[in-house]
Image (cartoon, rainbow, N blue to C red; front, top):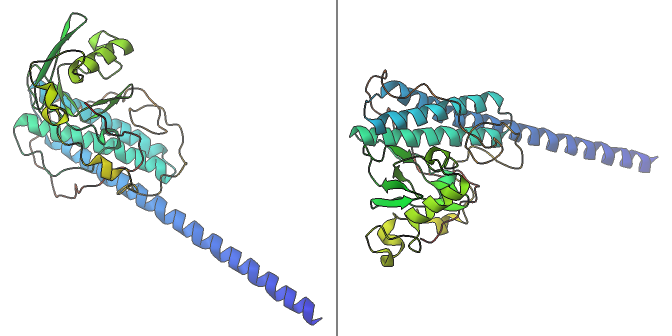
Length: 293
């Protein structure tokens, strides 16, 4: 009889412990989800506020605002469908990319770009342009440089094209969008990337032999980032995630272009960044390792 009672106590205790562990796990996941949602909405709302306070007629300003508007629309769609921390983290990345375009628009306007935004996963380790470049590919001229201008109105926050690192900077055409805008195609896009960034293809007239430092900005200490655990990712990305379709963002939202934005310049009163928690950090995850130039 005593043995039966002891066994009953043990079983009841084990069941109680299991229930407690499950309850704690559920509470933790609920907290992580709430934190990820709040983090994504914070950047999304900041992006929307900036779109409402900027305007400009210069081509570079209008294009940067249009690109920011597209990311705003895409992030809003992602937030509506997000159900996991990973999906909210992807929406956060989209909003941060939009804020990178906002900073570009402010630069083109000649005003302070405002506080830095957390680093984009896609731009990790690719650096940024520090010199102007001009090359001819398949009978077309392509230009790139560190500053906006009438000949370089398209900003790119940095990333990879067909595995090829493309540094942040201003370009004459958005050839990275599968190179269709340049009338090329994937192969043509690779030729453009090689011509702009590879010393083996063409010499734009400055010392390629000086190496990485001559053509690109610092790669944001990418080697140190290899061991990072994700920084401000707004929750555990895990392996959760659905296929959201639409958006250029890495991860489970699939490929394709952003839904068109209505923010292509004009109509937004002037203004500044309100507040400054554009603190550093990065998205965690991502396989955008640095590359040699």
